[in-house]
Length: 418
Image 1 (cartoon, rainbow, N blue to C red):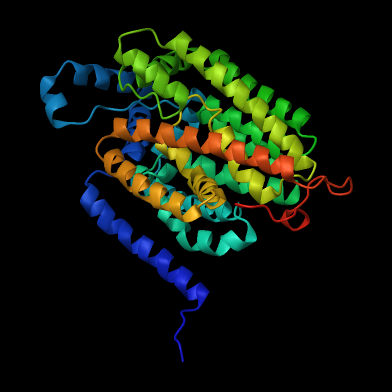
Image 2 (image 1 turned 180 degrees about the vertical axis):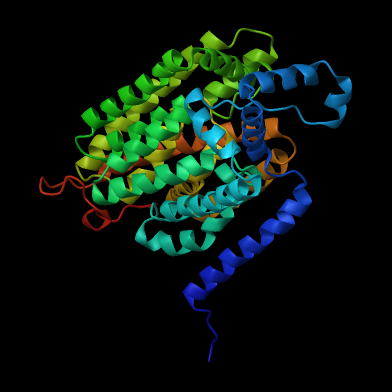
């Protein structure tokens, strides 16, 4: 009699092995919690009655003027979240640091798992078993390329945990109110996160008015900070500028890499980067709107549409860092696997893609700049391939029935490559 490991037990084993690998990963990595240290430094500055933005700017100026610091330490990073977050940070600064850290990291780990579990729901039924099995490996490969971003403790992992859970409630149950609240809350920290309001527009029904209302609420709250905390808001804008002028951190988006190239050449990057972003984001959004219409008509199933839609919405953010790309890793893997399976010779496509993926990870591990450049190439290749595949599928799908505008996978005929 053949011995077979039960599937639930196999899942537990894989997830447990990934969990046990993290301490060894930390031991080999050396530096952890670098983003959490930025929060901690900001709390310490507030507790001492200082402005965390000016404190960070002063630290960067001291670093720039000291060759000794540049030789032995990493460049300091400033707290760059908007002034509306400072009252909460001031409250936390008055609490025991150990309790704050324990609470933060516990919630952090929980919401990382939430992102992974929600992402498994993007898979079609016949894909779900394998996706659930390998989902924890996304921790080691955010955006499909090896990186230790999850060890940094960035607040984006908390925000995206809430946003992904709320998005799941939206596309599964049609309840988007929690999602709008989560995105507006996230925009208090980073205003570009308002671009995520495109998710209900593209995955829900009759969401234009609520989405526009939420956008105005987020923009209004952001602008109101200038009136409530004018000095802090001015210093906050100075700190945001340091992301580019000091840290040279333009992110992994196409617009970000374009801006980084201009900066490396000593050319102005703000206005050209904005024009480049609009020239690429607007056509992408129009393509997503067209595909969304076909999805509502039933020509595309939910599982076919959501991974591509989420990746497209991600690229509507002009600056993408690895911790913002991480939540979309499983969606990216699904798009890649479907493109391989849709090839005329899937085995040949896999024989090309897998070594290429290994080579890209080898070079991505060499430096952060290499990672960003390669990640940009992966993002562009997958969104182009994913949209192209869905446009083909939408053309060949059966005509939808008027009774089921949001058809599920079961009501759509089986399509090659999905």
